[in-house]
Every structure is written in C-alpha cells, then in structure tokens.
Amino acid sequence: MPDDRMMPNDALRLFFMAIEEVMGKDGMKAALHGAKMDKYIDNYPPKNLELGIKFSEYALAEQAVEDFYGPRGAKAMLLRVGRATFNYGMKEQSTVLGLAGQALKLMPLPMTSKMKLLLEQMAAAGNKTVNQPVRLEEDAEAFTLIYDYCMCQFRPKHSGPCCQVTVGLLMEATKWLTDKNFSIQETTCMNLGADACRFRIPKTAE
Image (cartoon, rainbow, N blue to C red):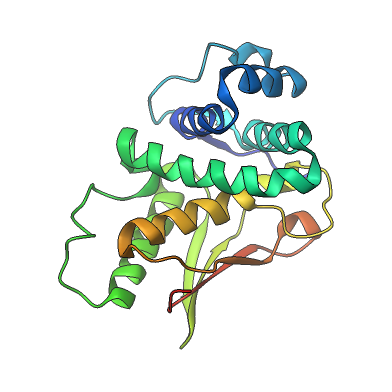
C-alpha cells in the first residue's frame, strides 16, 4: 500500500458538495453510509486549507459514488462530479485549483497559450496547496498533466483507467477557459500499476 498523504480539508469539502449536487442530499447520505464515512454525514470538513484529510478518504468517497451507481452508470456520474468540483472550486476556494477568478480567461492571448497557463497554474496548486505532485508536459498536439501520486491507488483494482473525477474537472476547466469542449483522456493510471496518472488534453477542441 502506498503512503497515505494528507490533503486540505477544503479539497474533500468541495468534492462532497459536488457529489451532493449530482446525487442529491439523500443519495449523498447513502453513499457516505455505504463507504462507512458516517462521520461526514451533515458534517463536511471545514472550509480551510489545513492538511486534515487523507487521500484514502477522498478515494473512499469516489468509490462510494461508483458503488452506488454500479460500474456502467458510474463513469458518467463521476465525470459530472468532476465538472461540479471545478465549479465549486471556482466559487468557493479557487486556491485549490490555483486560479484567481476571471483574470486568466480575459487575457488577450492565443487559446493554446491560455490553456498552457491554466494547466501550469493547476499543476502548481497541486504541488503547493493539495500536496499532490503534478507536472505538465507538452508536444505538438497536446498537453499532458502527470500526477505522480493519486488517490486511485487506494481504490479497488479497475479494468481500465478510473480517475473520472479528474477527467471531468479538466473538461470543465478547459470549457470554462475557452467555451469549447475538449476530448480529454486518461492514458495511464496508477490504479492499473502505472508509474503515474497521465491526462492528455488536446490543443484543438472537438
């Protein structure tokens, strides 16, 4: 089992809010109960950036959503949760995402340059605020965000890449920035034994 790192209280609070938006209050309670996370029912973590939550707890919550909907239905739901997580992050605690409001969106730069800035800022926030090592690579066609540590390591083995929440979050982030949809894919996953989770973000929209 990998070392269980700590993350900010607010990262899990925002995630819970996103799950509740997608599943409703009763669904959220059922998911938390199923994951044996009853202590969080009507008692979300505090709104601060202290490292008070374990990555394994975040993984438990992700798995709870998947268990609730079953493997087939869960993918779409987790993508929606990821999108909602980005939106709550922008409204409530943009430090978790590394983004300062609308400033980046309004910069008079080419779309690819803005996307690179967005992803660099999100990677910096992963390293500095979330306690999750992230780096960015780039080639002619795409950017790749590389997570060298991921909560998926604490979930049961899946048959394919399983970090749908991160895919959804990146989909919403790039849509927020450009008003366009991008086909984002997880190409390697630590849950399947890879050395890192890699997310390919193409430079051209769908």
